[in-house]
Structure formats: C-alpha cells, structure tokens
Length: 133
Image (cartoon, rainbow, N blue to C red):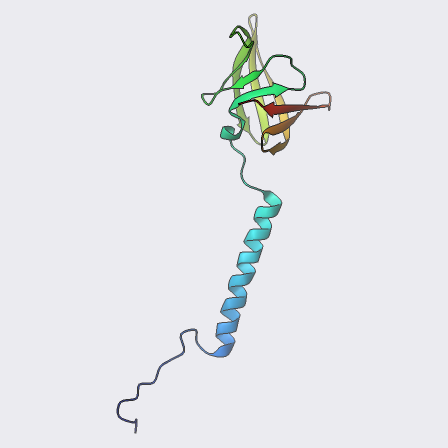
C-alpha cells in the first residue's frame, strides 16, 4: 500500500542506460553535423560574387550585378565589354556576345574567401579577383 502524500516520479530521461544512450547519440549527431559543415563549408551562391572586382588579368574593374549582368568599365563609366553571368555547379559561366556570335566561357571556382575569389582558366592558370567595393 502506498504512503499517503507521496507520489512516485519516473525519471525524465528513462533509466540510466537509455539516458546515457540518448545523450551520446545527440552528441554524435552534433559532432557529425559540425564536421560536415567544416569540411563542406557554407554553400556558395551568386550573391557571394556580386560587386566590383579587380582581376589579376585586367586593368579596369569588373562589375558583377545581382541581375546576372557583368561589365568591364573604366572609372569614368565607359563600358568596354559586357555580358551575362551565372554561378552553377561550382563554376561561373560567362555569356559573351562578340559581333554576331554568342559564346559561353566556363570557369571553375577554385576558392572563395572574404574579399577574394579564384577561377581556373581554360589553360589551367588561375585568375584572382579582389573585391573593390
């Protein structure tokens, strides 16, 4: 017969074995997620490339707009070359119109960091872009 006024309380996490197992499982999931994030890194998007850049191959700045247009223009505002661009499958795809011909140039993104990204050119060399604005 139960004593009057005493209530039996079940442990919140179950018995000791289950409580330890749940905590270990949670910590394992947390460590796995953190490890994946550190290895894979944050997802890259087109937003990361929007801005004014200085290329290691150009004298004049390159402007990458959020609407997908790109321009190479002088500080005075004269447009020397333009086209459209997009980021897909870890590559930047540049669409260029020269005369009546429209062509794509595809450059894999080698790295992206604060204020800088690097592209692999067709000949295997690397072009460095440094953010100006």
